[in-house]
Amino acid sequence: MASSINGRNPSEIYKAQALLYKHIYAFIDSMSLKWTVEMNIPNIIHNHGKPISLSNLVSILQVPSSKCGNVQRIMRYLAHNGFFEIITNRESENDEEAYALTVASELLVKGSELCLAPMVECVLDPTLSGSYHEMKKWIYEEDLTLFGVTLGAGFWDFLEKNPSYNESFNEAMASDSKMINLALRDCDFVFEGLESIVDVGGGTGTTAKIICERFPKLKCVVFDRPQVVENLTESDNLTYVGGDMFKSIPNGDAVLLKWILHNWIDSDCIRILKKTKEAVTSDGKKGKVIIIDMVINEKEDENQITQVKLLMDVNMASLNGKERNENEWKKLFKEAGFHDYKISPLTGFLSLIEIYP
Image (tube, rainbow, N blue to C red):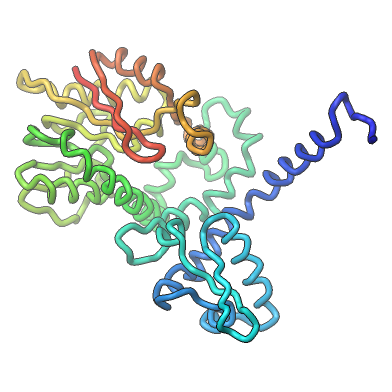
């Protein structure tokens, strides 16, 4: 029997090695996902109308014959991770493999109602994702965000100065909003009784448009940076207003903060929340603030959900933001002058929080 090392059983050490290697090469997960979006493979399979054979796929992709085996290996790995299903065609002479879409790859079909391909393209852009190579340098910088270290400007300033990245980011956020809109279809109770709502940081209005369609008597205001909302088309119950949420927020019966507060440190969140409180308590009214964000709950969530939330927490740290547990949210609400709140599940990892003055 092999001797123990540092008091550990050899099998434990081998498992630890496998864990290390899994994370050392984890970037291949992201790059393979980026590859399948860049190669338009989900759309190719979708347009094919049935599982597509490897030979047919590489023919459409027009890759050199020397790389066909590489395509097969990447597809095999993506299938193992749940992005495709491998089906053996028993009718073919050589039992050739064919690839079918799964729920995950259906979300990468461009032009579909629910498509997260823009999120893949934005987050995995080398300029942005490459910043994570400088985490050591960033951790010693007292005031700079990770992007401040690598790009010479904060993330929002960088977007403002680089229109192409700003467009990519807005498309990514719009694609994510469509996913949240799916969840909001079962949340009519949140909007019932409201006459007006202000979507702070609402981008190009993807979420607001869905709310307007579902509640045509509800007046929606999308409030975002001036360069985001300029020249956008308004309707009878949808308007756009440019401004700074740290200075003032348009008045309404409710204010919606979708994936906003996790971008900011606690002191900034309190400033934002105080402005939302002013907006929903104008003219003696007592409205509410609706927050769509994560609530870390390691004791009750499934391990995979907790892993996503903690992963996003590290990601938000790069912006000097954070994901929060219920106690941390409660503290923010109290310090901003709110007296009550209610948390409801929304998606697999997002919650809907209603807070009241």
